[in-house]
Image 1 (cartoon, rainbow, N blue to C red):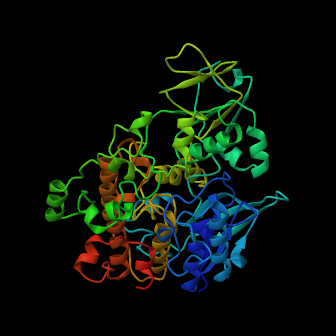
Image 2 (cartoon, rainbow, N blue to C red; image 1 turned 90 degrees about the horizontal axis):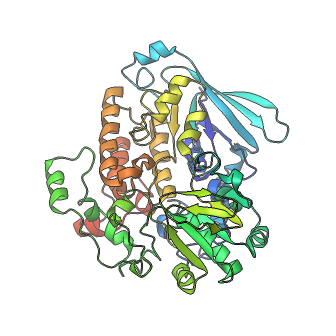
Image 3 (tube, one colour; image 1 turned 60 degrees about the vertical axis):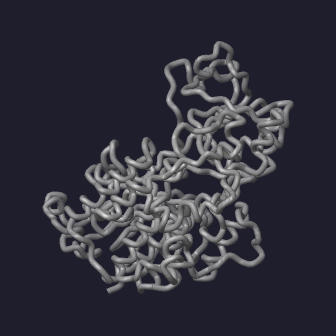
Length: 507
């Protein structure tokens, strides 16, 4: 029987899901709302570069071309690389572009019956319940709708697009009282490069946020306006922003992305010996402050907490030179509001005079994930509790939602690398190479990962970051698939060499 697999989104995760389901003989159809593949790499701020070193951000069976010599390729190089991958594996013919998925609805056993199941899908099989997903899509040009039936759905909708996170303000203190313009970084990034440069030229600009988009936009504004119209970056909390991946003269991969570094961390499902080692080897804080002390930007939390939250952006080249020369001003504030002239910073009497405010305040990825479901029960399941991580087993499967997987929601240091491992795992699951444990066992495992993320990620646990534990995580996927999790040659190499995509080329 031909199994139809619906994949929502043609970003990196969607392309990988398409490639690996094809390899197992399934029939994928990919729905992409835009006219192009690439997800967040389709259009970015002009100066955006890859945050992860190139060797860690590549497909295991499709290396970067030799013409890309930079360690951190720019947006155009990344996009071309993704496009080449899709062409090489002939994936484009499986994609329906300009096709927005409005909703998905499960048609099969009743909710009462599903609630009585002890195994995922009733018998622990991806197609065991014999239900179907009704995928309702809209053509972006004609606005006509179609209904597609699928045996399995893979959500690859990401969490960094589409639904902007806009701060809320008390009455008469929001953008409505401001005589200037307010926009989200998503809208700025969507502008053509020259139009964006012309748009910010000669304006007094405040950028709200301190992650990658905020830093890139501030850098562009400083290049356009210099010290004549300094760009103000308004932030709540300092972060360990890196100038490169050699922050202490040693590649970060050797400090945090090998098996030895993971011995320092308490892991979900670890035994007594590993728990004891993690207690004895708890991370020692680094003393070198990466030039941050000079600008009062040293975070109060540890670098280890930051990498466990996937919150370590690399700063644009010469960013702090721009701060030093005065074309970028850094201003910390727990809160802010608007007035006619600009922005009122918490604790300051005089407003920050501003022509344009750009909100680099992120996206509502959890809402995006929840809203695609028709069923209120499934909406509640996928969102989980607000005081817990999104409850996905292996960060892919909700134990109580049959015939569906999520790829690309949980974060890592290299999302391409992690998404590929998950898609390979999922393809083996769909091909019946292995079966999932009972619903109760999966929920226990989810709870252990939730405990880990709260312990090490602090207030950012909802990001579901596996950044500092990606080898341990991959080990679990490998064991499920029947692969040997140890991929290096020799004890020393296994313990100290960084792990990356090329370690998983073969089974």
